[in-house]
Length: 115
Image 1 (tube, one colour):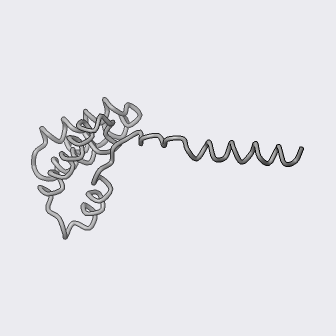
Image 2: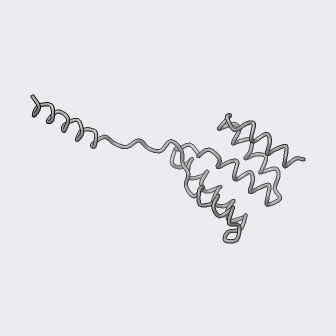
Image 3: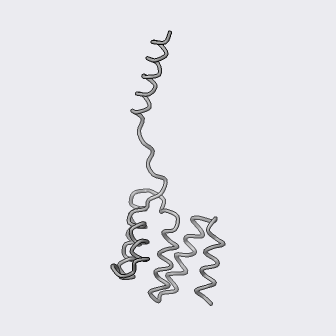
């Protein structure tokens, strides 16, 4: 009986190993690196960071994946910092549309930038 139970357990364990992994829910790309560079602020210009974030969004679309939470918000912040409030507001609103749970924080940021 013990051998049968052990054999069945081994079969189940090996069958679980053969299962394909789930693809990630969100596409992050260089987003974490870009946020790190933003806070260091001495290695990469704002324009270069904007380029990287635009690329993250484009690649998420190309890969048929959802862009990660915070990507549009960070890009919006970069646009505001670079003196382009129209694009900044657009990306803040995109963040709210994709992630409604961020609405209160995004509204706070929008009010801060408008004020």
